[in-house]
Image: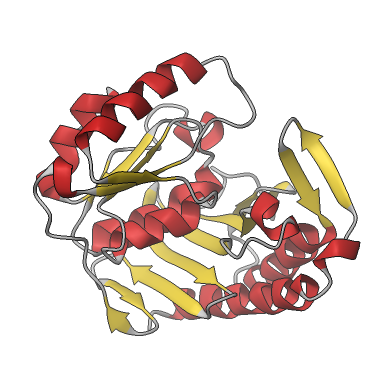
Length: 265
């Protein structure tokens, strides 16, 4: 295992332990609403702090971009390395006791995704990837699915939940894909959904309003599992986000055409 990936795994497991302890008494956790349908708990903050402490101790000069605390240890862009962290992707699921949430830690080196960890603490499933070395689930090599037809494909997505300005456009995409695929799934934790694409559990995934910490680790997992993702970080993607599509190469053009996301290559 690459040393930087090993540090990220240690950080993800530490965060996962914090999350699992809190899950035993989730009903008593204080919850803060950041904005409409966007929640944060003390668990998010504690898990993020644990991750940052481990990363900063190992790599004090690396930049960190984290969901709850923003940039730490130098602003993104001042270092060749930027860790992109979501300490608890799927907070709404977590506070309702719905067991679909994960820790996500990605590392960009000179603008290229280099390391990725998505950890599901409920099921103790650890998805990892190092650029050029493949993707793994609990140390077992994983690959994207081999399906070639959309009508056989199971596709994941995420509904808009903060900004509803593009809801009609999204519903049009949803209508098209409902009619042309084997099914759509919206589980509420994008990092885990994208990891499922890497493992072949979903044949594809798309979402319009993701943030970098939702997808950085997962995108590398898909790429290293032999799949395709569009260039989410193009333009102002690191700060403002872009639409994301993740799938196998046989389905990427078909899926992208239906939902109107340009593909490269």
